[in-house]
Image 1: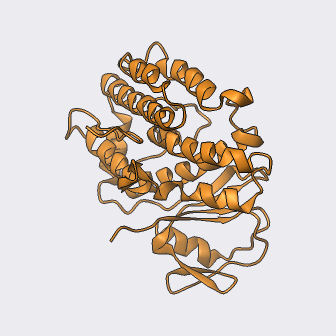
Image 2: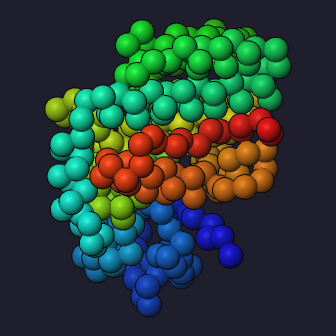
Image 3: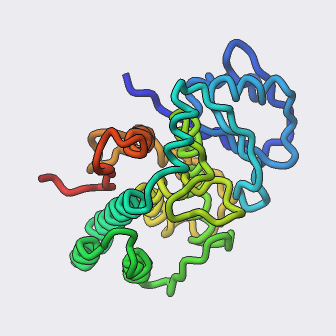
Length: 298
């Protein structure tokens, strides 16, 4: 049986959250922590220490969000993985060539995932992205990722004059930010479970970024969010991110199937990629296999 991972969104919840028997209790509704991948909370949500402790026991991060629904802080469990020390050392000592090779594979998968989105929502424009993916080299020295992004956004949202601006918190950008937040929370959880250190990223390694590795490993799954936002835009873009139905649909991103409605969910694929990366940095495999969103059959 496949677990249906949930993101519990309490950003606008102002009452108290309690616990009981491995569950969090919200207005007499009980949600098993085994089913939760992340909890989003606002500044007015009331917590007791027992909730934080129990969430940590079940490896569930609690992300505190600002008025836009974007995380600004969080509590994260310490890993119980038996290889945590070995994997931290392996991350710190990962050679530059292997780091660049892994990043190349991540970028290729992301661009091919974007091509998958266009194949559905903008037929005839996917081939250009597939061709660009084939030009990505180790470390992406020519920044093909950015070239692909410019082409992708201009064809995914052609009528809106759209420009991707992270953190804007409005319109389509607000929807995308919120959906990516869901992916990031789940990826952080998977990283902690795998005994990896979320700060030690390959491409995202700015000094101020606590979750660089999560930002690296979530890249191939961004097209799943883009698909949802594309489907939401016609009816919900004017309502804004406060629309509860839109938010409810966006939190379902980890339950989507990776390949045309069949196969692993996004949640499973993220966990698998994180575990593959852990094995990769320890030298047990020579290359990092990265899943692709909506990969064509054959």
